[in-house]
Image 1: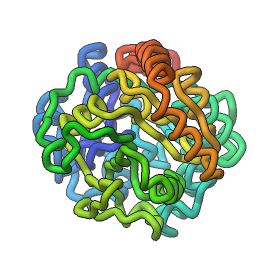
Image 2: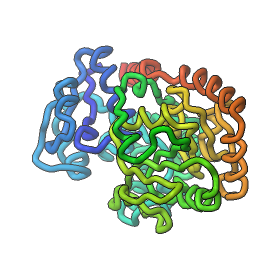
Image 3: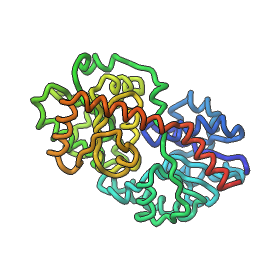
Image 4: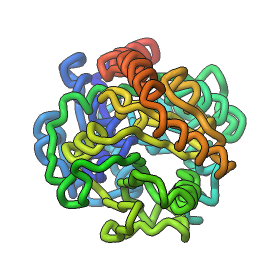
Length: 359
């Protein structure tokens, strides 16, 4: 196999679940495949990580233009690995990770320019690329059905979650949002409609007389997502029983998980579901929507509810918060489930596919 090149455009992007996958796999490939190259445009946001990977900054443009027009010129005939849903559509000798089929399945969750481009690009990559990786059997089925990607091109490679165990803690987040010593449920995600935080807020307002808080962390890109009007994404907003804490650091997030009574994931469409697995890895018991890939990924480690039924969600939350034995049981099951999802295993499966595809 010619020297593998990794599309490291993720170094120019804020780290969400998609970029987390790219970071953790890339770190391991750097050691497992010593001659691998990491190529990025300018505008790197994560200088320490770029240095760790030995990333090369090439080209004069940025974003999709760099990826489509400039990146192919720097491959020198080597195969390309892209880990973040996007890749040059002109290339055939490449492997691409497409995490889900959300631009097809939940178009209302995305801005019109974003979903138009991604629908076109995903279909093109699915037809032209040597192989496509995705996170779950659910996503593989969705990509076959909605994007017409041939089944023999698709390989399911689940994500890891053990990065959260290597993260430090920052308990200042508890004081900043008046959470120290308080019971609360944590939710993490964007204000995109398919994350279903509008329903969670309706439930939270209905349960305002309960002796616990709802804490919502995360942010949204207006260029990508169609933001749900009912979800106030302002991190400064607080009221008596809801805390919107906005974007948090990894250390702050770990602290929030570890001090929560539980984690709730209301999404009605999910290609994998990394935050509930992070919670499980830290011993935070989980409630989840029974939707998308979530039952496949979380298995018996979560208490499930119907994300389209506010009353069912409220009943699950009330049962969860009133039953310490249930929470302990879910905590134990969650730890077992999370232990099966390591980034070492993910990287090994990625490397096996690279070798099987390119020799």
